[in-house]
Image (cartoon, rainbow, N blue to C red; front, side, top):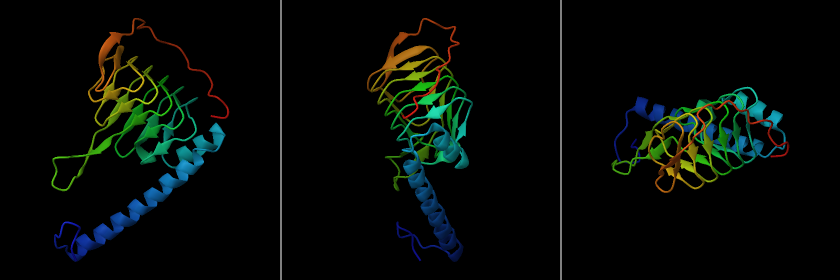
Length: 197
């Protein structure tokens, strides 16, 4: 037996590859089912299903309709956090989202990407941490290995390729600091999620 690069595999390596492929197919099916669940117009049902598949969600947090997961097991949300419609939450490596975080619609958060210099185009993972009271505007993209500090603001359409300091306001492609959040004493609550979103 040979792998896709032509390398000869031992019997144990072959069995390991078959097992890993089977696990991968099961995960793909689970992710497909979660995508279907994401369109159920009930936060309670979606939250229950997300938690069953491994998403950790704090009190009062919700994920609006149309969410896409690549692996739900490593996605964690704190309390009172709202994720907007059609968000991508990549859990192939730890994705930790704090409390009172407002993530707008169509935000994409990735924690795995291909290494373009690798001979095999291998994946390269990096955990993403979004601290408390962060606001991420619509259609922003967060790349692997990023930490967004407490109270930071990511502008709409920004592509975040480097860590964002606490209370910084960033925008652009790639995202750069364009301002600073003046209020450093944040203690608000986001409130309830919309019923049918």
